[in-house]
Image (tube, rainbow, N blue to C red; front, side):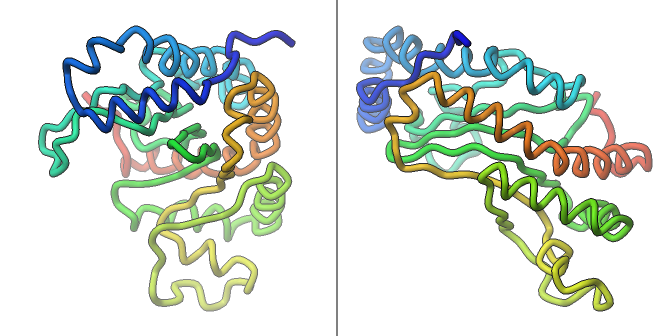
Length: 236
């Protein structure tokens, strides 16, 4: 299959790093079009190329290529770091955030020396993650199959914040790491940057995202319960 995405070259990544190093509006303006064509446009093309499988996973996905991709120019308001430009870029594949705040999402990101992609569910109030725990406990076999699917997709489980006490002492041992989690990520990281410079990356991501679909379905079910209960509300 032919894709819009033809890759992000080492030269484009080097220019992005130089732009971050110079942190200069003059430098950025001089190289703005190169950065757009070498970094921003390929990432927007990635969104277009992945849209068919993502819409199939969730018909409510909001996949505007312009809005989905991060900007090279950082918003420094209210931020301790006043560095104006990024050397890492990302895109989130998710439902429209104003209608479905805090929804789980697939993602892609890259840094100067690595890239990665996967599936994430974070909540502003970590205690609300009990809704995910409830879905797990209602059907442990379904959840463990979803964990296996993520492993088959090449994803590893991680969590940035765990409960220090066991909130579900009677739960099966194999569920304990997940029931202690206040957030979840199933992700793949790669240091072979040559893979970033090839459209074959699209096939790889399509396959991984599709295989991990059972976990996305679990996350969406928990999120929809939160919205139905008024725990999460659409933004005005």
